Image (cartoon, rainbow, N blue to C red):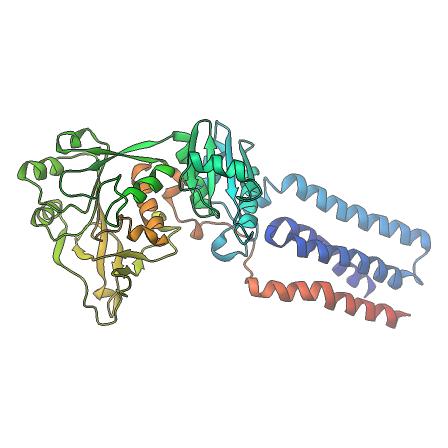
Length: 455
């Protein structure tokens, strides 16, 4: 009986040591539990074996136990980053503290030094803890990434210098610096960090922005202008270059947003023969736009979707909310709603349908974002305008769409990590408190009671 209880105690100690490495988000609790465990273990072991074991054997036994625990700790310390880091138990919501195999592969191949600076909020209510945890995970695989946090008030001079370089930078976001290149991420997540690092490493990527048909101007700060959209994309590594009809065929990526005038037959012909990546964002009221999409193989409605029985479009502030988004990698960080002034149903038989508005059943959903070959069509009007860029969901959606389209060679996009993240076992976070209470309180009380009865 004594031997069995002693073995159980040793296994609990080993479990706590391993937990320190496989559950990084609960290190403080585990340290508290382990400290109490050592005290209780010493007291209980002495009480259990005091009368039946000689002092010499008791000292020898205690030495073996101490050496066993030290050996476990040292082994895990040296092997943890190579072995357990791929199998750690992540109890955070959405596996926020885990890195995908693609992200690990990318940072391992970094050949240049990267500095990442997190900007804390004024009241320190932010994701600084999450940022530091993710950065420590990245540090397991590369020594190229250095990171730190600054406070906009306590580090005013440095914060102002960052704002001069990256105008979109604000508390709660982070800036990536690679030499003279900079990039910005407005949300702390593996997806945003990898995108920002990639953008800073490769430098600004030029993307053609069509003009001449009433598209919102990139330097217009009025409600219907697109200056905020252009600035945010620039800080994320995408530089829009305005081009007219004559230069379309020289562009690797061409964006057309909210045209107000019909395209000519020559322009339609050039777009149909265009072999780059074409991104269209806007309504389909124009006859020429519907003809273009029809020739591509997409049927677009000329009437906006605005009469759903269950109000899937929830109208507020003059806009409508798109409430169905697929689990495509480009939408990993879309947490808010995508809001536009109007949207139009898109139909196609052999294309990817990535966003829709819901009806009474799934068959009644109205697709509004489709991808066919190298053509990306989003039928939401004015999403990129200054007025609608106030919605965080629009920023996240457009950032994902542009990054995915402009950087198809980034391997991180290739799979959805939720289905591939290896784990030792799964435990709901709600039960960790119960486990903590049992280890810290109930087990010591039980063994204390046994030791009293033994006397």
